[in-house]
Length: 182
Image (cartoon, rainbow, N blue to C red; front, side):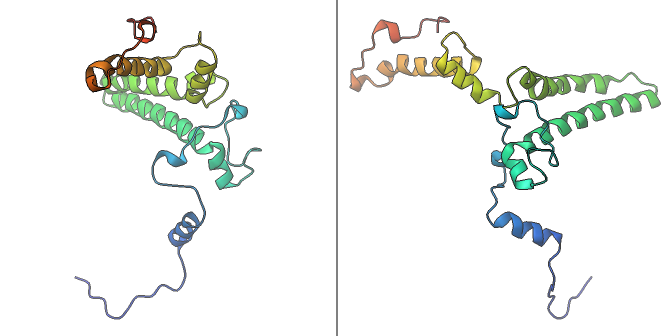
């Protein structure tokens, strides 16, 4: 058991206090996903290294450019790949078949394909909103994202007459959903 006598005073700030003060001033870093944004299309396939030509060592600018997203994506992929390879190594050392590593290879393949390989096929890392803009400008370009929006809005409009009979809503036939012909 420890008994403390007197009052503890801290004369100088430690690293935690310095970082806490720095974050609380005028920084945009918040708890949650709001600080992690994908880089813009203009940055194309840049890795956005903190010391690279885009951020030039400025951590705040690096986060604003989307460097934290590429950092998380790349290190997440490397971590998952390393984890799976370690599973293979452990299975080999105990002379078992690497069922665990094979079982975890599915989520790893999905992570790598969705967050790393798939964006590389687009004009940049910033892939989802650019689809939405393209679909708004080009009716022949359709994605699951905008198709779901159209489907939800269509169902909402279709059901509005039944859900709100007091409004006397009458929709022309051409605006109602027709199966998969969105």
